[in-house]
Length: 121
Image: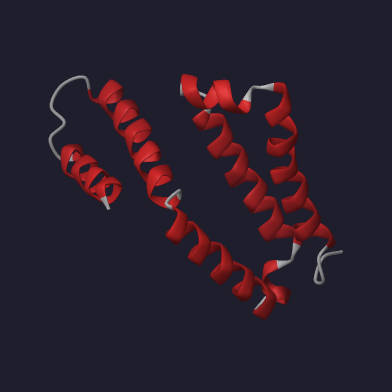
């Protein structure tokens, strides 16, 4: 819950921008990205979201497994990975040779579900 407080504090800071807005906006977005990642990384929330997402995907598979949603998800994943590479610690983790396969697997699994799922072509 401390991460949620951090995210709310960052949103409050957004209203206080005065000078050098561009640099502050970039710093704000980086801190907000880290705070949201910390919120989603909590074990209980991560498990509940994963299990719920799987059940929803199975229930609404015809709407989820289609090419345009798969393409959108690949774009979102790419944006998150590229944005995360600006953080040196994230870059050190994802840039390691043994972690590259895991990062590639995210994109491959999205591609397989999006284009080759039950509703894909």
